[in-house]
Length: 195
Image 1 (cartoon, rainbow, N blue to C red):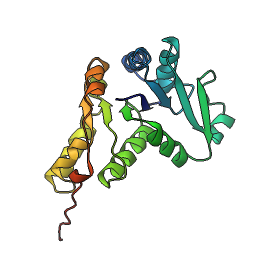
Image 2: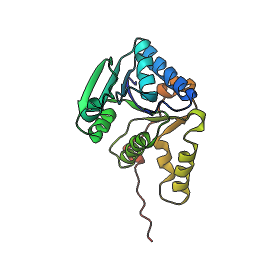
Image 3: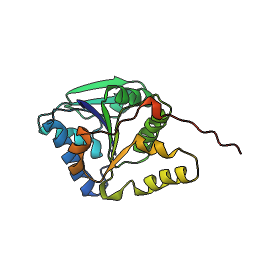
């Protein structure tokens, strides 16, 4: 049963409003299901919108943020709890450790970094929790096609595509949370292709 999630997403305020609507709906779903939400504690963008929605709907939202971001006044004041860390790497480690599942909304290179590092750890057998990508407006289509290409060209095993689950909107999230895709150690298989 999923009781905690960490959300990876954008901190930009300049993006299309439909992404904010999705973040708002995500926060409401988590709050109404009494799922504790962990974020990067940011005060802008989708990160803030998820946090605000969780809190406005009576949920608990915990932020994990490096001290240098607090010093830059990027912290969302008013979160249920704040965990201050020294580095971005520590932040990612904690967000992965505390979560029963990872949810990924649209984002930029920071979000991609969080997603791909987590996928790499999963492929190596160091992380086994569900990863749910919410593909709002087809935002991740090109990345998903690139991942398909890594399989077609033998850079990744076909079975490794089970490391993540893609849904098109938050409307599908309750079902995904009820039956997350499982990933077990026995799935891990490496094939070294000779040049």
